[in-house]
Image 1 (tube, rainbow, N blue to C red):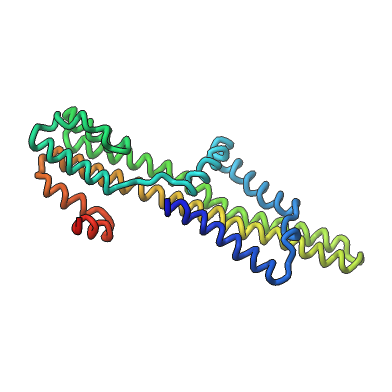
Image 2 (image 1 turned 30 degrees about the vertical axis):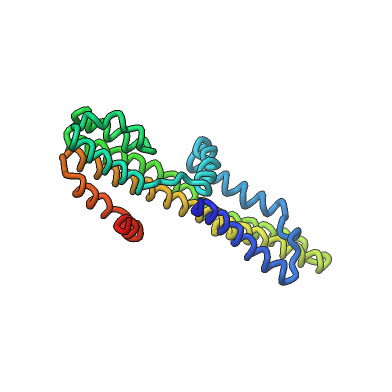
Length: 259
């Protein structure tokens, strides 16, 4: 819950800091919301994504935004505890006895890999199969992250395009009312503002959040694989416990030792 609220808090803080400072300095919030500037930045960025990645990936983008701000939580400590529990039971009653306990795993990957081990898959084949799944997941996640990284590059460029267009229109109307020209110049630079703002407060942070989600899921899968291999090799539970706890972050290792 803290991770999810932290992301939303960061977004709110970024919006408040940037727009709040503008208002404090005497600016009008209405002056920032010029439809043409927003259309150029957002429309241009979205069109570049559709051209480069296809319409299907563009549609998927909105579910990825939701995933970034409301990510699944991977409880690696719970996975470690379950593997230790299964190791104790397998040593006492045999590997086949733990099949009915696979539902205790909260994630599909350790369930599936442990089932392969129970069915008699040798450690090398099991390792290769798991690595293939991890590698495929990584390639899929990296392609999703790359979408937002590219958007973080497209958006400022679209903002510059909007600014250049606004300045061209201003110069084309040279000799008109000076106050009107000043307003047109200010409007032109708003496109750059939105391009930089969306890139650095929205798109690039979403890419970073997705990268963090990927690393957490990958860590859970690596711990699960180590647990299955250790279980299959028949190591005593205390050895499995030491190996799996060693893969946890340092703070969580200390918590486990104190418990």
